[in-house]
Amino acid sequence: QVQLVESGGGLVQPGGSLRLSCAASGFSLDNYAIGWFRQVPGKEREGVSCISAEGNTAYTDSVKDRFTISRDNAKKTVYLQMNSLKPDDTAFYFCASRRWYSHCSNSVSFYDDWGQGTQVSVSS
Image (cartoon, rainbow, N blue to C red; front, side, top):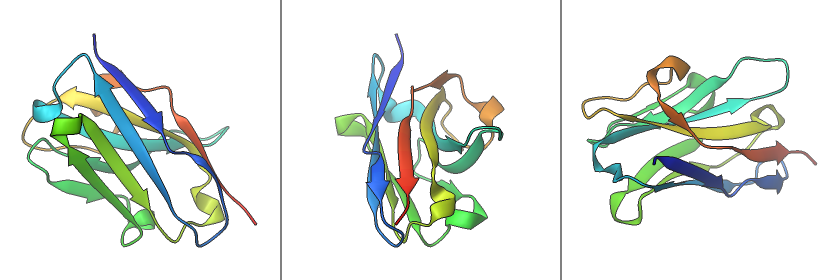
């Protein structure tokens, strides 16, 4: 059974950093694309970043040069390092998976399984 568990969220001041983790269980990460998404109440879920099974990455424009996605298949974990955080980054963050080797996507519809999410709040 595929299970994804996010952790690492919290409250941080503007300009601060957080590292989110997406831990997988029930499957090997090796052949899976992983995406990070975020959502605020009343808005659609937004793709933030993704990483393919081959290690190719993609970012939405608003987080480029601030966020870095990486994966450690041995630890079955994908990370989202978030630097220079802004109040606009405040959201509930989710990770998602799909067994797909060649690429990843920042589209919600691409993914099959989702974690429960973790809250990120950026405020002074």
